[in-house]
Length: 266
Image 1 (tube, rainbow, N blue to C red):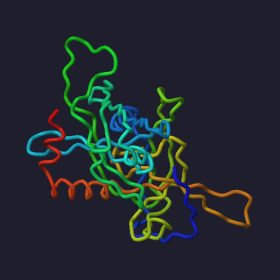
Image 2: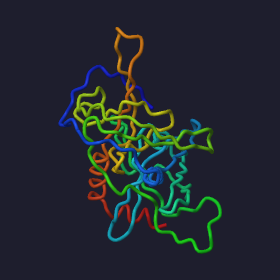
Image 3: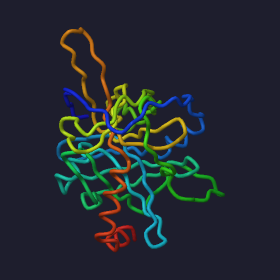
């Protein structure tokens, strides 16, 4: 994750909630986990890994899947025509599928300054491992609900910890929404959520969600809250709102809808 220094932040439009905080049901956590895919990019510079949240959009009756992720994860894919990516995503029943033909052309939008990107998932997915004879594919697992958090609300961060280039494990962390701000250095003028628990290495592009199962943002980076008078400090995770990604997705589809139908016709 890229490192940013937090100097000061300004709270925006969030009111303190008196809502009773609840822990999410284990099945809900599993459902949210399935909507997060793993990404491995191989290029001239080596291998980079991360994750992203799966977004499903209906384009003229055709289910089309995109990944909302952090730009720094896919930078090597964008910079080199020789680079390629593997994407491991779950279907709705929990079977893992792999897309291994992801190239630069699949990056449909990116904003390097805000560390955000959208990737089109190829339609030629293949299952990892054996599947039962009666298996029926019903589509990839994707986010069902999105929302806007309130100040002090419990927030869960989900991503993957890559053990090596081939293996990863689930990581779940809990924090609270410390602040929503448009004044964070490097993100000025754009709303970001700051969560009072730092995401682990490898969780970039992961999902921030509430105990009720509403996705709120994508893990972008982290900041150190510096206090020169104290020997320690609090670390915060920066999340870009999902609404930001959906707006970008709406704009690129509106600009050239036929492009995605052609790219998804393998």
